[in-house]
Image: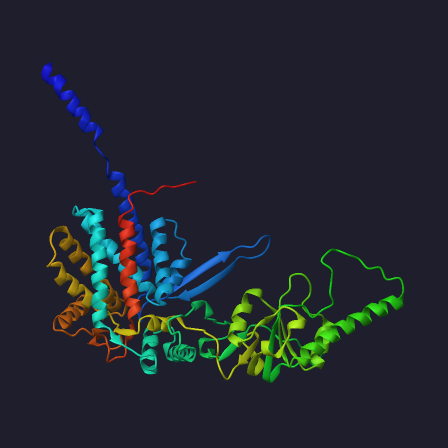
Length: 517
């Protein structure tokens, strides 16, 4: 009896300290599986020979209105993932990862998701082998820092004055998106707005792309100035083409004044009516004369929510004064327009002066697609519009080989570095280094090549010191990818590996999902 009584407390303490980790493992496995499922959906779109996705969204109207379907065909990773109805939180993290890559580098949105999926697959193998999630996450942090250093060692410096190098970089990013036409346009737009005094201070919100229904990509045009998707007033034969323009952006109404409260006016005879109409005409005519006296011949009028910005009478007088009128300019466009035209918004007719007008050598209304558009051309382009892909080369003025060359080089150098480490750290780094081979493997697979033989040959070439050897999908073999002009900004690769590792680290450290209602 004494022995039985003595064993009872020990058994009780053992029961109290027991921790069930099954739920944590299940949640972690569920998150990894969800992330890999998202990767599988985007993986076939990687590379110039990748497949497109058809995204269909439908919305049914009320009553007898038929359902409307919007169809988008794209191979852009950020677009695909943003349109997918993802419910699982870890899956949404992969979609956010793609958007983060798009914001940071403007390219590599599919690459970063494919990398993250491959790292998750290797992480699952490590966890199954008994590795602790924290150890795997710490190894990923070390790997990302080392990988960025390897990429910098492969990079080639480039100057913004080297237009050919910039076109090659843009062509790689736009290879599956009409690169022959769009790449020179993107580069010329970037070079035209570089401010030598502040080359690193660029705002992507200054990018403006005007889309018109009924046009094709071949109709794309670079306008050194401004494009307004508005029609000019044609009342009383108003002008639709002005040379040597002086543009005013006004925020007041060229119409009769009204009180701020509801009111009614009772007119008892025709004499009073004539007097009201005469005063209205004189008021508007006075405004038009002040506008004309300032030298303005193009008027951009902000849309008003209180009353009409212009009336038929004011449009008639403006047309007689040979002033082009574009009305209903949205309030949120005013800042961009004034910055582009190098003018100031005018809030009162009394403040309309020549020093607040924006110059342009031509303003004309042109027919594009299914409607009309205004094109404002300038001799000097003071705006700061930019193209995302070229921003990479401003932030990091280096180019790096494409075609899977950087990924296979990182994989081999990291695997060699893992042999210098000890314990679990070495094992984890070696496993994650092999995960980077997914990029050349997928590129060759999407191009219809034998991925195993291609990746094997690629490893052999890099082992011989050919750092720029990559997959030439056009010729179907391994070549010096730099000689083929397949290059990309360094920022695309460094951002992809860094963001992918950080995303996988976060997923590994999640051990439970708490739903709050």
